[in-house]
Amino acid sequence: MVTVASGRYAETLHADWGQTFGEIRPLHAETTPFQKLEVFSSPRFGTVLALDGVIQATEADEFIYHEMMVHPPLVAHGAAKRVLIVGGGDGGCLREVLKHPVDAVTLVEIDAAVIAASQRFLPGLSAGAFDDPRARVVVGDGLAFVAETEERFDAILVDSTDPEGPGEVLFTEAFYADCARALNSGGVLATQCGVPFLQPAGVTASFRRLRSAFADVAFTVCAVPTYVGGLMTLGWASADSAPRRRTIEDLRAVARGLSTRYYSPEVHLAAFVLPGYIQELLIP
Image (tube, rainbow, N blue to C red; front, top):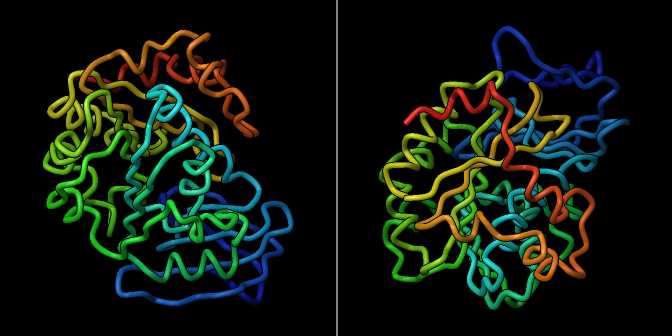
């Protein structure tokens, strides 16, 4: 919560440990039909978006998460033309997807207030992506959209909050089965799966549920300073292992000319190398 008198914001994700931003300036706060939305500025991290007391994005480090959500699956696919983003109302993933020669991107965000606040206070996250003619924005339930759609996609990116509150339904076997049905042959699903050092049970549950719907399941890791607790895991799932086993030469050919600050073909391959404490969580 924001303590205006002291100019501090304390994240409330973990009851016994967390991070605090000092010298902050509150910019916006509202209670939407789905969650508490807050925006504040920080001298170190720029403008910050929080939902239900949990940091979602900061101007300073968002590029790490968004690049690693988007580029590994799209570069590995090599020819993605239709992409679905579930969540992602801040527009960061949309911005990164549109760096690729895709034909169409559908973004399904349940909370219109997240889109509005992000465009108003963090316009650099989307960098005009919402106005791109290839982008279609659907304000609605991502779970229902994936269950009901007859469209097929080359990549599905689940840019959700943690598995409590509005994001909880996006971590179920039923949802992953619907994602598998909505993918074209050779398609890839990527989904955020939390920080395993502090959320180990969630990583194990995600692995098991993904395994129920996909033949090839893996995780990548990246380090985002404001997603505290060490490495963050991003789930990876496909009908076969071919996209995950691209050579460095294949990745370089697809990624040539891609403008990034964190992602590279070398980082792509390295991100699949998991420390032992994370490997131990991947229990069938």
